[in-house]
Amino acid sequence: MQKDFWEAYRDKGLLVVGIDLGEKQEKVKAYQEKYHLSFPVLMDPDKTSVSKEHVFIPYNLLVDDQMVIRYAEVGFASKPLNSEIVKLLK
Image (cartoon, rainbow, N blue to C red; front, side, top):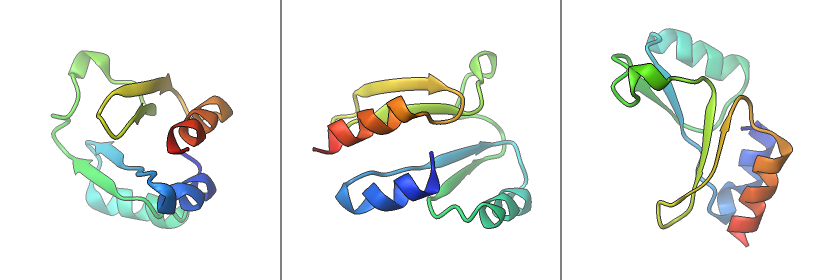
């Protein structure tokens, strides 16, 4: 998720959360600082939030306010994801 996109839409209801799988907190914090990430990153040091057989990084999920998955994408966020977010926020 691009930082600018998150910052532009967070006041309209967009929530972005990163989940780190297995890294040390210091390394994650350094990454957040290096790339000026303003969204929260949850720590999962034991990788218990995902099935070990199905880990794809990065993996983007767009979930609406009813907890329905509206979009899923393996890889870095693309323009289609951004346009889907804008549609859901309207």
